[in-house]
Image (cartoon, rainbow, N blue to C red):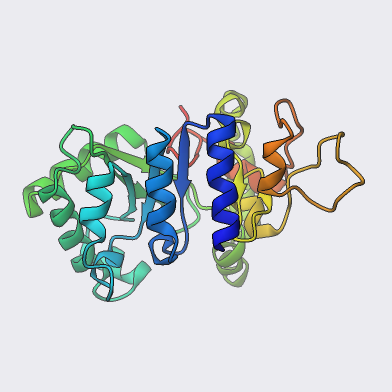
Length: 274
């Protein structure tokens, strides 16, 4: 994301009185403008969430990252797909679990995940084509095992369903399980989850500034529908359009992958919906 787009994001945060800025990547911390954006957003009173892969804390040039996040009061949401070394390393690569544990211990030492102002949450998603287990029970297991084995504490565990798109979708197709997983999602759809899906109150901004209804639509190249006021005048919405256009009550683009958010207990950037 360029400095120009980031400057526009900051203007939108101020003009729209937006309460939360959720930064994700890859590794968003590697953007050269990351710290400037965080500092500007926090100065506006915006809650900043950093979707952190934990191992970034040990990359060259990131030695002061953890201290910066703590000093800035940034909320950290970190992916840890399991509490066992074998499962994490199989999914993310050898050595990932050990680095992740060291990073969590470092964040705990800075005051993260201890029930105070510095919030630390972890993210779980299943390894295969199944729905996540009950979030509250799994959170209790994570807290018990990470606490007993490594002395780690954290605030929340978010369980996310795997979306049948991109790399996971390709894996399902290669194994002949795509149709079965889609059937599982459809059969477990819950109408009540529609009231709380993230696309109803969140927009996703790509590195060029284009707007999408969610990260998954962004991955699929499905842009947010244009408001009537500018329909026909441009090809797609840009974050700069939020300076002069209101998206309240605008249609949301949907497709079959949306069942991934409405199945079972539901799934969103903030974990289970029910």
